[in-house]
Image (cartoon, rainbow over all chains, first blue to last red; front, side):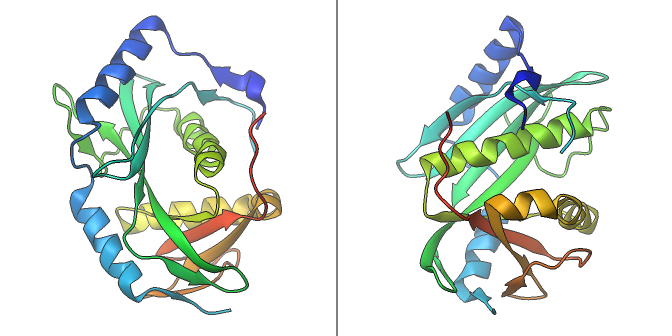
Length: 48
Length: 167
């Protein structure tokens, strides 16, 4: 991908994203979905 | 690949009780929406032919709910900038693999429409993506097969063909 095409975040955007990351860094996210995927990969296999 | 660009992201990694790497960005469309990309470690490894057992991470994605710090992975924001948002998610994949080499990524949609979109997206860009990554598609149940274009899959599993170095 062309690195020059980055859409730079504003100062306000950065404050919002950093605030979000700090607030949720230790909290469960997508917990039900992750548990379902954990169960899937108990049995998952690849056929060539 | 298109050239409409991707959003700048912030990231944070938690290697303690919850093994995951997260990226956040603001989707600037009809309105501003805070988006979160989450790479979560899965408990079980998978045996990959010709490679061996690999650690699996799930690639999840969602919107921050208004006035809360909850993340909604069913949200359909229709913000008019889907390509930039997809580009942003895809742009974090090599960043992830640089930090977590010798792992593979699983991605699935939270509904059938999204599953079809993800399979279709990889099909359309397979000529480009397959030079960098090996893909498998999840059929019904726990069976994965080599990815074939224009086939719908429940989920996608992929890993880089060689180590990724971000310059």
